[in-house]
Length: 313
Image 1 (cartoon, rainbow, N blue to C red):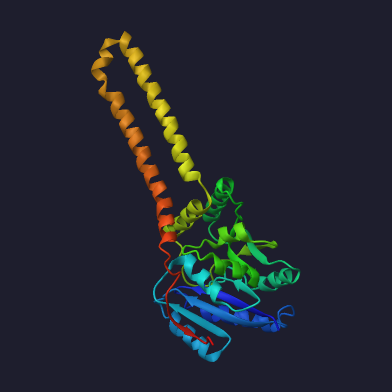
Image 2: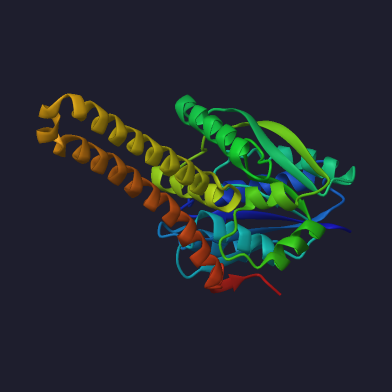
């Protein structure tokens, strides 16, 4: 029998881990498409502090098909799920969130497309029951990153989907210490099928995504897959240089006919200094994001460090 692994990243999800594991087991045991497959569930916990680990230990003790990996600390929203995917030994893998925003009912649809020969099946959000403002901002972000990226990015794809073991082998060979799965799928994914769904609200608990984590995700995608920041800095710097030269020439010509302006020479100089200084500060930070991204890649640090595993052979 072929085997499918379901990888579920979690952080402070004590209210959801038991329910999501029961839902996955139930659909594999009762859905006609999935009955012919072996399966296991891999929870990778990013150092929860709310009792999630104790609940996972309890679940693993009662069901050997449930496995767990505990990280020694929180390694972020990208590294931990990616590392969990690399540990699976299976024919295909499904990555799904613990909070039920990704519908478990999509798994049979993913598997059917996999049986049709697709190596990657991506869950694409066409609607969301989250904040309309947040969904709108995400849509604008996806449009922008798609426009400027050297690789055509996948709109409203969060990583929820199915991945064939052949693609998992590509991930294992990448050796990327700061992986951005959505970009990697867009760049290296082949025989891909997009399946649409409506994103649900969280079943319980609070989201751990905030404006800082969303900005971190946005900047990682920008620095990994676009030259927009550096190119914009160059173009704007060049344009401002021409503008300042033009202003200087205009001021000199006008001052030749209006001598009183010679006593006010400090005003345009201050304006130019503040304008150029503010732009330089902005783009120094922007270019710094690229430097940080490169720095992380050359240090060759591990994706995560494990504390322990449960139910692994």
